[in-house]
Amino acid sequence: MTDTIRTLLVDDQELIRLGFRLVLEAESDIEVVGEAADGESAVRACRELEPDVVLMDVRMPRLDGVAATERIVAAQPAVRVLVLTTFDLDEYVIGALRAGAGGFLLKDAQRAELVAAVRAVHRGDAVLAPAVTRRLLPALLGDGPSGAAPASSSPPATDPAAALTERERDVFRAMGRGLTNAEIAAELFLGESTVKTHVGRVLAKLGARDRVQAVILAHRHGYV
Image 1 (cartoon, rainbow, N blue to C red):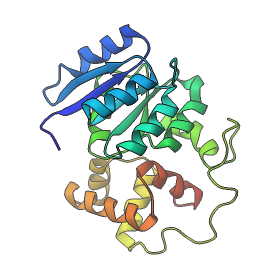
Image 2 (image 1 turned 90 degrees about the horizontal axis):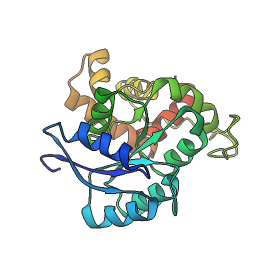
Image 3 (image 1 turned 180 degrees about the vertical axis):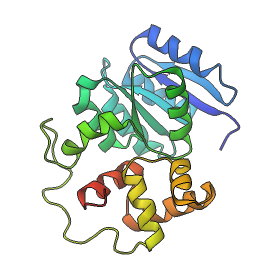
């Protein structure tokens, strides 16, 4: 991990990129290493610059943010993608999360929310705005109105959390509610480093790629 969070800004609107750059570069631990105005440029920039976090718009020319996210995550699994969305673009967010994005952020987010989201994604937390999560979960679980294809035709017959210890189940439930490591630590009276260890074990035992998949599993199997 580098001393600063190397961030790539991807949006087809220059003024939005400028606004994000001004906010992020005011932070001592965040460095904007590049910008891209479309998905193809984003994929190329990721390959050349190797950022830690990508702020990815979804509606762009040449290659949209969903396809770009899929290519980036496939080629560079260590890169974390934070999708930028609005309330009327749910179907794009669902596609991006399935493509491997680490979370999503509303485009009208406040300065503190943007900075916190970048830091959270960088350390491996899922950034799932609660208000939007409630709208997206039905579609992510395969029974929503968005028109997105379900993740599977039917829920798995076995309990994915069967191998978890009781403490790991507590952590799994908290993850399913979208809590960060710090929030889980406070709720369960644990140290953050201990929570981080538990989260890693939960993801490994679930066979989940990231926290977003863990959230979906928690809701699908009634842990939340």
